[in-house]
Length: 321
Image 1: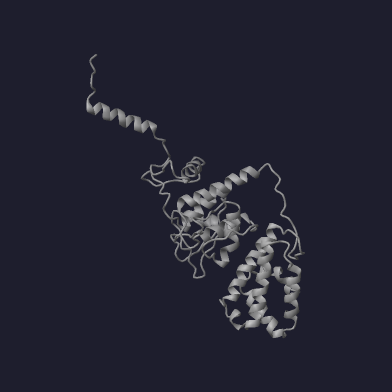
Image 2: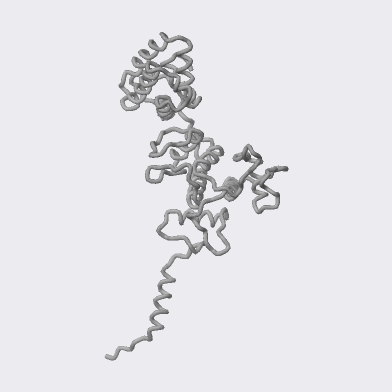
């Protein structure tokens, strides 16, 4: 039997055709099948909420600017009412994003800087994104996720809320709050919000469990109480490290009181049968023996490091906020 050989050019052409037919065609030329973000980008594009660049790419790893971010926010959440007057010293009024900026100012979820600028071309960080998103969503943190890096105090609750709701994620245990967020991570967060919103449209959302911060031995605390205590423990760490001018005024005896409070909370969180009431009473007895000035010094040091919302966790130790 005689075998007829095909010319090399035909074979190469056939192989190229097979390769092309076997590839998935995406809306953008630089999307990769193996990347987790690819289906998110595709879906958000198909919903008409994102665009790529004129060269046909999306540049998923590229950092996003404030102007680009607010444009995506407006489209995702359906904001479309413009403010009548927007004045920033670094915005002329004829930029491509000016209409979106007017919408943003009307919606009120992001503002300019004290110096009168908006800095539209400045890259927006992951912690800034968390704050803006949670300003819109209004979530209250219910769980505390330990991170390998320190979260900015002003963004901590927002970050923890989005981590708990799986809208933003840690990267190898780090949140990297001060790092500019990428276009792909922004898309993942926004589409996740849309998916969650759509899943709840026909469901009744249960109310958050109530309760205060009074702990009775053996009680199993709610998620809100656990989170509040974890945030308080973190703040007490700052007091013990002397990170504020108020903490630096405390004597060794005062710091021991702070340390005993922290120990009681961490012990209780580790074992709910721990004698929390006894520990709180022991601290309260020592606290009451201090002068009013000493008491105020301790309160000021703690208030400077523990957010006001969570100071109620200390009432069993001091008898008051």
